[in-house]
Image (tube, rainbow, N blue to C red):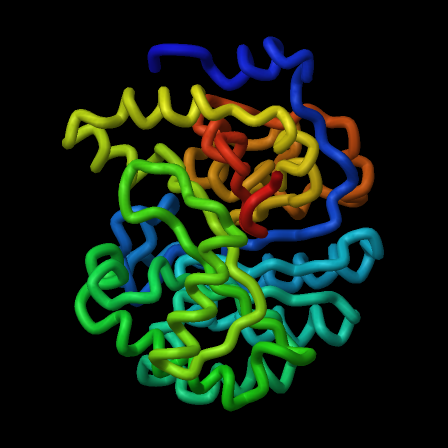
Length: 318
Protein backbone atom coordinates (compact mmCIF):
# COMPACT_ATOMS: atom_id res chain seq x y z
CA UNK A 1 0.00 0.00 0.00
CA UNK A 2 1.07 3.60 -0.39
CA UNK A 3 1.67 5.87 2.56
CA UNK A 4 2.75 4.97 6.07
CA UNK A 5 2.48 1.34 7.15
CA UNK A 6 1.33 0.10 10.57
CA UNK A 7 4.71 -0.58 12.16
CA UNK A 8 5.98 2.76 10.83
CA UNK A 9 3.04 4.47 12.52
CA UNK A 10 4.00 2.87 15.82
CA UNK A 11 7.58 4.10 15.45
CA UNK A 12 6.49 7.60 14.41
CA UNK A 13 4.45 7.87 17.60
CA UNK A 14 7.18 6.42 19.81
CA UNK A 15 5.13 3.33 20.64
CA UNK A 16 7.49 0.51 19.71
CA UNK A 17 6.42 -3.05 18.82
CA UNK A 18 3.13 -4.37 20.20
CA UNK A 19 3.38 -6.84 23.06
CA UNK A 20 0.80 -8.85 24.95
CA UNK A 21 -0.55 -8.43 28.42
CA UNK A 22 -1.86 -11.47 30.30
CA UNK A 23 -4.97 -12.74 28.46
CA UNK A 24 -8.34 -12.16 30.12
CA UNK A 25 -10.52 -13.32 27.21
CA UNK A 26 -10.42 -16.59 25.28
CA UNK A 27 -12.08 -15.93 21.93
CA UNK A 28 -12.92 -19.15 20.11
CA UNK A 29 -13.95 -19.37 16.47
CA UNK A 30 -16.02 -22.53 16.77
CA UNK A 31 -16.43 -22.88 13.01
CA UNK A 32 -17.00 -21.12 9.70
CA UNK A 33 -20.46 -22.45 8.91
CA UNK A 34 -23.10 -19.71 8.84
CA UNK A 35 -26.62 -19.20 7.54
CA UNK A 36 -25.48 -15.93 5.89
CA UNK A 37 -22.61 -14.97 3.56
CA UNK A 38 -22.12 -11.24 4.22
CA UNK A 39 -19.82 -9.37 1.83
CA UNK A 40 -17.82 -7.78 4.67
CA UNK A 41 -17.22 -11.07 6.54
CA UNK A 42 -13.51 -11.30 7.35
CA UNK A 43 -13.59 -15.08 7.87
CA UNK A 44 -15.62 -15.73 4.69
CA UNK A 45 -18.22 -17.73 6.58
CA UNK A 46 -21.19 -19.23 4.76
CA UNK A 47 -23.65 -22.13 4.53
CA UNK A 48 -21.19 -24.29 2.61
CA UNK A 49 -18.31 -24.07 5.08
CA UNK A 50 -17.62 -27.21 7.11
CA UNK A 51 -14.61 -26.23 9.25
CA UNK A 52 -15.59 -26.68 12.91
CA UNK A 53 -14.14 -27.54 16.31
CA UNK A 54 -14.41 -31.16 17.38
CA UNK A 55 -14.95 -32.84 20.75
CA UNK A 56 -11.26 -32.93 21.71
CA UNK A 57 -10.81 -29.19 21.23
CA UNK A 58 -14.08 -28.43 23.03
CA UNK A 59 -12.84 -30.42 26.02
CA UNK A 60 -9.45 -28.70 25.87
CA UNK A 61 -11.06 -25.24 25.88
CA UNK A 62 -12.92 -26.03 29.09
CA UNK A 63 -9.80 -27.56 30.65
CA UNK A 64 -7.79 -24.41 29.89
CA UNK A 65 -10.54 -22.23 31.37
CA UNK A 66 -10.63 -24.34 34.53
CA UNK A 67 -6.86 -24.07 34.95
CA UNK A 68 -6.69 -20.34 34.13
CA UNK A 69 -8.47 -18.11 36.66
CA UNK A 70 -7.11 -15.02 34.91
CA UNK A 71 -9.26 -15.78 31.86
CA UNK A 72 -12.64 -14.43 32.89
CA UNK A 73 -14.48 -14.47 29.55
CA UNK A 74 -15.20 -17.09 26.88
CA UNK A 75 -16.08 -15.26 23.66
CA UNK A 76 -17.71 -17.55 21.07
CA UNK A 77 -17.68 -16.49 17.44
CA UNK A 78 -17.85 -18.03 13.98
CA UNK A 79 -19.54 -18.32 11.45
CA UNK A 80 -22.71 -18.69 13.41
CA UNK A 81 -21.38 -20.31 16.60
CA UNK A 82 -24.83 -21.67 17.48
CA UNK A 83 -24.60 -24.07 14.51
CA UNK A 84 -21.68 -25.97 16.03
CA UNK A 85 -22.71 -29.19 17.84
CA UNK A 86 -20.39 -28.34 20.77
CA UNK A 87 -21.75 -24.82 21.28
CA UNK A 88 -24.04 -25.69 24.17
CA UNK A 89 -21.42 -27.88 25.81
CA UNK A 90 -18.99 -24.96 25.79
CA UNK A 91 -21.59 -22.54 27.14
CA UNK A 92 -22.67 -24.83 29.97
CA UNK A 93 -19.11 -25.76 30.88
CA UNK A 94 -17.87 -22.17 30.98
CA UNK A 95 -20.87 -20.97 32.98
CA UNK A 96 -20.37 -23.79 35.49
CA UNK A 97 -16.81 -22.50 35.90
CA UNK A 98 -18.19 -19.04 36.65
CA UNK A 99 -16.96 -17.45 33.43
CA UNK A 100 -18.73 -14.77 31.45
CA UNK A 101 -19.82 -16.14 28.06
CA UNK A 102 -20.38 -13.99 24.98
CA UNK A 103 -22.31 -15.28 21.97
CA UNK A 104 -21.49 -13.27 18.84
CA UNK A 105 -24.79 -13.77 17.08
CA UNK A 106 -26.02 -12.71 13.64
CA UNK A 107 -29.65 -12.82 14.94
CA UNK A 108 -31.10 -14.59 11.89
CA UNK A 109 -29.68 -17.93 13.05
CA UNK A 110 -31.99 -17.88 16.07
CA UNK A 111 -34.99 -18.07 13.72
CA UNK A 112 -33.73 -21.04 11.66
CA UNK A 113 -35.17 -24.56 11.89
CA UNK A 114 -33.47 -26.49 14.68
CA UNK A 115 -32.61 -23.31 16.60
CA UNK A 116 -36.08 -22.60 17.99
CA UNK A 117 -35.00 -22.97 21.63
CA UNK A 118 -31.54 -21.41 21.35
CA UNK A 119 -32.59 -17.93 22.50
CA UNK A 120 -34.21 -19.43 25.59
CA UNK A 121 -31.07 -21.52 26.20
CA UNK A 122 -28.91 -18.40 26.08
CA UNK A 123 -31.16 -16.64 28.57
CA UNK A 124 -31.26 -19.65 30.89
CA UNK A 125 -27.45 -19.84 30.90
CA UNK A 126 -26.98 -16.10 31.41
CA UNK A 127 -25.06 -15.63 28.17
CA UNK A 128 -24.33 -12.10 26.95
CA UNK A 129 -25.46 -11.63 23.35
CA UNK A 130 -23.49 -9.40 20.98
CA UNK A 131 -25.71 -9.16 17.92
CA UNK A 132 -24.84 -7.87 14.47
CA UNK A 133 -27.28 -5.27 13.12
CA UNK A 134 -25.49 -3.04 10.61
CA UNK A 135 -28.29 -0.47 10.48
CA UNK A 136 -31.73 0.34 11.91
CA UNK A 137 -33.35 0.47 8.45
CA UNK A 138 -34.14 -2.52 6.20
CA UNK A 139 -32.53 -1.26 2.98
CA UNK A 140 -29.06 -0.89 4.46
CA UNK A 141 -29.18 -4.19 6.35
CA UNK A 142 -30.35 -6.18 3.35
CA UNK A 143 -27.77 -4.56 1.08
CA UNK A 144 -25.11 -6.14 3.28
CA UNK A 145 -26.76 -9.34 4.51
CA UNK A 146 -29.41 -10.36 1.97
CA UNK A 147 -33.18 -10.13 1.49
CA UNK A 148 -35.52 -10.49 4.47
CA UNK A 149 -32.67 -10.47 6.99
CA UNK A 150 -33.84 -7.22 8.58
CA UNK A 151 -37.36 -8.44 9.31
CA UNK A 152 -35.98 -11.66 10.80
CA UNK A 153 -33.46 -9.75 12.90
CA UNK A 154 -36.19 -7.53 14.34
CA UNK A 155 -38.30 -10.59 15.16
CA UNK A 156 -35.38 -12.18 17.01
CA UNK A 157 -34.55 -8.97 18.91
CA UNK A 158 -38.14 -8.82 20.13
CA UNK A 159 -37.85 -12.42 21.28
CA UNK A 160 -34.65 -11.64 23.17
CA UNK A 161 -36.30 -8.64 24.84
CA UNK A 162 -39.22 -10.86 25.86
CA UNK A 163 -36.74 -13.28 27.46
CA UNK A 164 -35.34 -10.47 29.60
CA UNK A 165 -32.45 -9.26 27.47
CA UNK A 166 -31.52 -5.53 27.76
CA UNK A 167 -31.83 -3.40 30.85
CA UNK A 168 -31.18 -6.14 33.39
CA UNK A 169 -28.81 -9.02 34.09
CA UNK A 170 -29.01 -10.37 30.53
CA UNK A 171 -26.90 -8.09 28.36
CA UNK A 172 -27.74 -7.40 24.71
CA UNK A 173 -25.31 -5.30 22.67
CA UNK A 174 -25.68 -4.50 18.98
CA UNK A 175 -22.84 -4.25 16.46
CA UNK A 176 -22.57 -1.72 13.64
CA UNK A 177 -20.10 -1.78 10.80
CA UNK A 178 -20.09 0.65 7.84
CA UNK A 179 -21.76 -0.35 4.61
CA UNK A 180 -18.92 1.10 2.55
CA UNK A 181 -15.26 2.03 2.68
CA UNK A 182 -15.55 4.59 5.46
CA UNK A 183 -14.81 4.83 9.16
CA UNK A 184 -17.64 4.36 11.66
CA UNK A 185 -19.25 7.54 12.99
CA UNK A 186 -19.18 8.47 16.68
CA UNK A 187 -20.20 5.39 18.65
CA UNK A 188 -22.10 7.43 21.25
CA UNK A 189 -24.01 9.46 18.67
CA UNK A 190 -24.87 6.43 16.56
CA UNK A 191 -26.01 4.53 19.66
CA UNK A 192 -28.45 7.35 20.41
CA UNK A 193 -29.80 7.09 16.84
CA UNK A 194 -30.19 3.31 17.10
CA UNK A 195 -31.88 3.58 20.48
CA UNK A 196 -34.36 6.19 19.24
CA UNK A 197 -35.21 4.49 15.94
CA UNK A 198 -35.47 0.91 17.20
CA UNK A 199 -37.62 1.95 20.15
CA UNK A 200 -39.92 4.20 18.12
CA UNK A 201 -40.50 1.87 15.18
CA UNK A 202 -40.13 -1.59 16.69
CA UNK A 203 -40.28 -1.28 20.48
CA UNK A 204 -36.79 -2.81 20.80
CA UNK A 205 -34.40 -2.23 23.70
CA UNK A 206 -30.67 -2.93 23.88
CA UNK A 207 -27.83 -2.14 26.27
CA UNK A 208 -25.08 -0.72 24.07
CA UNK A 209 -23.89 -0.27 20.50
CA UNK A 210 -20.43 -1.37 19.38
CA UNK A 211 -18.94 0.18 16.23
CA UNK A 212 -16.44 -1.92 14.29
CA UNK A 213 -14.30 -0.87 11.33
CA UNK A 214 -14.37 -3.09 8.24
CA UNK A 215 -10.99 -4.80 7.94
CA UNK A 216 -9.32 -4.61 4.51
CA UNK A 217 -8.96 -8.38 4.26
CA UNK A 218 -10.70 -11.32 2.56
CA UNK A 219 -14.14 -10.59 1.00
CA UNK A 220 -14.10 -6.88 1.81
CA UNK A 221 -10.57 -6.45 0.42
CA UNK A 222 -11.51 -8.23 -2.81
CA UNK A 223 -14.58 -6.02 -3.20
CA UNK A 224 -12.44 -2.91 -2.71
CA UNK A 225 -9.87 -4.20 -5.22
CA UNK A 226 -12.58 -4.91 -7.84
CA UNK A 227 -13.86 -1.36 -7.43
CA UNK A 228 -10.38 0.18 -7.50
CA UNK A 229 -10.69 1.48 -3.92
CA UNK A 230 -8.32 -0.75 -1.96
CA UNK A 231 -5.36 1.66 -1.88
CA UNK A 232 -7.60 4.60 -0.99
CA UNK A 233 -9.14 2.70 1.92
CA UNK A 234 -5.74 1.69 3.28
CA UNK A 235 -4.65 5.32 3.02
CA UNK A 236 -7.81 6.41 4.86
CA UNK A 237 -6.95 4.06 7.73
CA UNK A 238 -3.31 5.18 7.86
CA UNK A 239 -4.19 8.87 7.72
CA UNK A 240 -6.55 8.49 10.69
CA UNK A 241 -4.11 6.57 12.92
CA UNK A 242 -4.92 7.32 16.57
CA UNK A 243 -2.09 6.57 18.99
CA UNK A 244 -4.44 6.59 21.99
CA UNK A 245 -6.09 3.38 20.75
CA UNK A 246 -2.96 1.25 20.97
CA UNK A 247 -3.04 0.65 24.72
CA UNK A 248 -6.55 -0.79 24.42
CA UNK A 249 -6.12 -3.05 21.37
CA UNK A 250 -7.86 -6.38 21.89
CA UNK A 251 -4.77 -8.34 20.83
CA UNK A 252 -3.18 -7.31 24.11
CA UNK A 253 -5.74 -9.06 26.30
CA UNK A 254 -7.47 -11.61 24.04
CA UNK A 255 -6.21 -15.00 22.90
CA UNK A 256 -7.82 -16.16 19.67
CA UNK A 257 -8.38 -19.88 19.05
CA UNK A 258 -9.20 -21.19 15.57
CA UNK A 259 -11.53 -24.10 14.85
CA UNK A 260 -8.44 -26.35 14.49
CA UNK A 261 -6.91 -25.22 17.80
CA UNK A 262 -4.23 -22.93 16.32
CA UNK A 263 -3.56 -19.84 18.44
CA UNK A 264 -3.60 -16.27 17.11
CA UNK A 265 -3.39 -12.78 18.54
CA UNK A 266 -6.81 -11.82 17.13
CA UNK A 267 -9.63 -13.04 14.93
CA UNK A 268 -8.37 -10.97 11.98
CA UNK A 269 -4.93 -12.55 12.13
CA UNK A 270 -6.69 -15.89 12.33
CA UNK A 271 -8.59 -15.11 9.12
CA UNK A 272 -5.29 -14.30 7.40
CA UNK A 273 -3.44 -17.33 8.77
CA UNK A 274 -1.00 -15.05 10.61
CA UNK A 275 -0.27 -17.04 13.79
CA UNK A 276 1.07 -15.64 17.02
CA UNK A 277 4.86 -16.15 17.12
CA UNK A 278 5.86 -19.51 18.64
CA UNK A 279 2.45 -20.21 20.19
CA UNK A 280 1.38 -23.40 18.42
CA UNK A 281 -2.05 -24.72 19.37
CA UNK A 282 -4.25 -24.65 22.45
CA UNK A 283 -3.10 -28.21 23.16
CA UNK A 284 0.46 -26.87 23.57
CA UNK A 285 -0.52 -24.10 25.99
CA UNK A 286 -0.17 -24.86 29.69
CA UNK A 287 -0.22 -21.37 31.21
CA UNK A 288 -1.91 -18.53 29.26
CA UNK A 289 -0.61 -15.96 31.75
CA UNK A 290 2.93 -16.77 30.56
CA UNK A 291 2.06 -15.08 27.25
CA UNK A 292 2.45 -11.66 28.87
CA UNK A 293 5.25 -9.71 27.19
CA UNK A 294 5.28 -11.78 24.00
CA UNK A 295 5.28 -9.89 20.68
CA UNK A 296 2.02 -9.52 18.76
CA UNK A 297 2.01 -10.50 15.08
CA UNK A 298 1.13 -7.38 13.08
CA UNK A 299 0.58 -6.33 9.46
CA UNK A 300 -1.01 -3.39 7.69
CA UNK A 301 -4.59 -4.54 8.34
CA UNK A 302 -3.91 -3.57 11.98
CA UNK A 303 -4.47 0.02 10.85
CA UNK A 304 -8.17 -0.86 10.89
CA UNK A 305 -8.11 -1.20 14.68
CA UNK A 306 -6.20 2.05 15.25
CA UNK A 307 -8.00 4.40 12.85
CA UNK A 308 -10.29 7.12 14.17
CA UNK A 309 -11.86 6.12 17.48
CA UNK A 310 -10.35 2.66 17.11
CA UNK A 311 -12.05 -0.67 16.65
CA UNK A 312 -12.28 -3.97 18.49
CA UNK A 313 -14.74 -6.76 19.13
CA UNK A 314 -15.88 -4.58 22.04
CA UNK A 315 -16.38 -1.48 19.90
CA UNK A 316 -14.55 1.85 19.84
CA UNK A 317 -11.34 2.21 21.86
CA UNK A 318 -10.88 5.97 22.30
